[in-house]
Image (cartoon, rainbow, N blue to C red; front, side):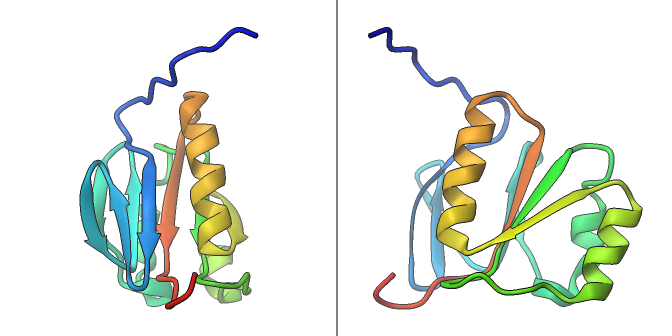
Length: 121
């Protein structure tokens, strides 16, 4: 078996999460948040389309973590993101973190918008 060290680009992987927070780059960040090659920042949730639209052209896929369980994002939000060329993939926040980390390790142009998980997750 051949093992390779995972090397990330400018973006940092998700290291962990808990009720209301995510750990990225050794730092605890309050959720909701947006992370990717441009860094990690607060995100205003589904009403904050402008923060997500700033990613247009910089990423190919935006993963949206919807908390503990998978849920639909508002249709208007999906429509505006996709109209600007952003691929949108919606899943629970834990699944979104895992998927983001894998694609990030492959050097893919991805970003991640996360809603918090609750206690016991």
